[in-house]
Length: 481
Image 1 (cartoon, helix red, strand yellow):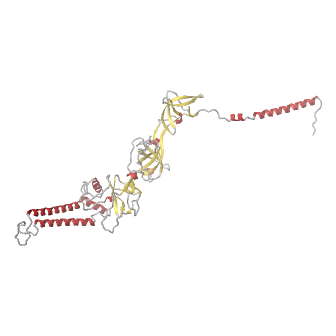
Image 2: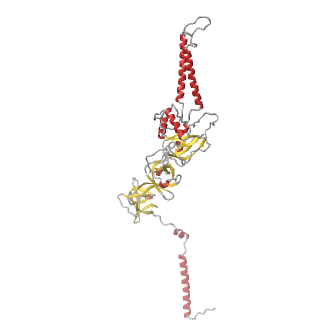
Image 3: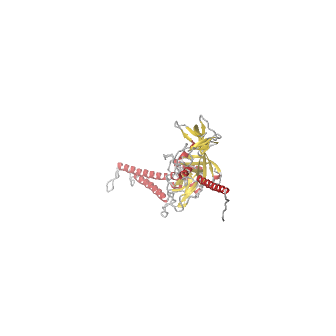
């Protein structure tokens, strides 16, 4: 196709206009492209972060409650390990009987033991539980005296077997009611063995022989006329002199006295006894059997079981910084996994606490160390950051009944503000050179210091009160740059 332009002046005008239009269009395109392009330096400058400024948070007004929150385990209180203090008795000394004691009925986990209950059986013999603070450390029988005898007599009286008085001396009256007590529980009391009976017979025979010897000495041998008079010669042995005769009498009398003393001493301890391994004294009853350590056929050495009180407690551990804020007697809120709530009280802060399998109580008889003030750390650790053990007593178990071993949430309130107060993040509070607290507030593009007094803190927030200046809800306090 061929373009035809008009000829003459008109034609030249049109050509000029067309060229100017094209040049203008190209220039505009170049200008636009130039505005959209950046040099590397310009691009880097465009990506620089804005100038830093303070990071602020608004002052809030709210009620502030401080607390310590942790997890705990539901347990039974006052754990105590139980061991037998000696061997169980034997009804006879027959050589056919085994000399190794074996568990023939093991303790039953969860069983509740009252005074006079049978904890277990060893070689068919019972192990009774009685209330008393003095441990059973020896066999008790006729002739024994002491505090352990007195608490045995008190227990027998509580069980309806009156020994005739709580004297602290084990006499025949005590031996009689011990026999009645055993028989009432379906067992045979530890009466004298065959060896004891044989020894008694030998001692009684020794007294008889000594009496005969004394009679013979008194009669001067064959009892001749005059006793000590002289006989005629003729092969007859002359009688002893008075001095020799008196010596023989004294010797015979001494032998009789010794035989009587031996018999009396033996009879004083002869009778029904309570073997050291057949009674366990516990300070408080009833108790609940916790962990059982022996089974049928075992030798009952060492710890046989752990007993606890029937009281429900919650055992927990908190960091040392939290423990320093707690003290005995503070109320605690306990929440189960299904949302149920019960209340408790801090019964122990720090010291030794039994957790899990009775904790330390299993090793030391369940003795506990009470702390009447904030613990800070476990007693004797010397480390303020060391974990602190807590024991929370629960007087009304409610939802915790039959929940031993389960995990619960424990909340201990430290205090709360009186109504709504001004609060700021802990990070907003700083200490000046003169030791006073303050916050930095951003106002009208400037940051100013505002002196404050700090109060209760909780969950990263702290109560503040302006000290000689103004601070209001909504003010922006600096928490960082």
